[in-house]
Length: 178
Image 1 (cartoon, helix red, strand yellow):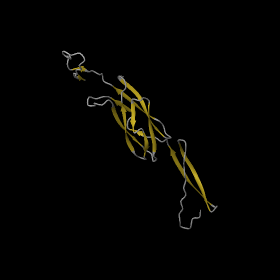
Image 2 (cartoon, rainbow, N blue to C red):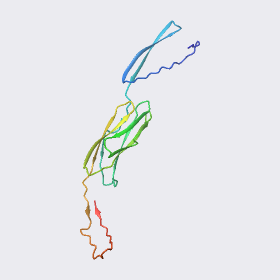
Image 3 (cartoon, rainbow, N blue to C red):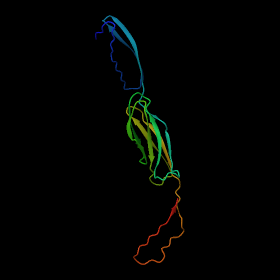
Image 4 (cartoon, one colour):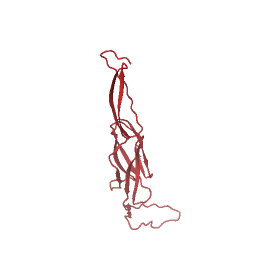
């Protein structure tokens, strides 16, 4: 390339690496086949990773929660200068994550909701969910759930239908107390 006197020119230098390492090299260039110059080129190549606000989650059913599921939230953050694609995998179907996949912009964060929906009567349950990113390590979140003992009782001790005729339906309502 020809550079006129007192002018500047730009040259693109593209760096890409497929492995984690520190890079340091001298790059040489020559002007007019006679003047030799060098400059240092350095880079620290790190794995793509997202930061987690929590690595352990505990799910329980508090008295103020009338639902048949329990939710916890956490924040994932992208500390890097590139967009990061992510997705979640769960060891057990009783846990689900929303959003289950996406792309997190550079230096951005987002809130993730993990939902526990019990199946069966297991009192205490632990399982792992994993945050995975393209070209990066898998991150583990330990999820522990606890169910309180169920204790229902009838409000009344007896239910009487009185005298009934054959073939006639009668309906009575009972009340259960939790």
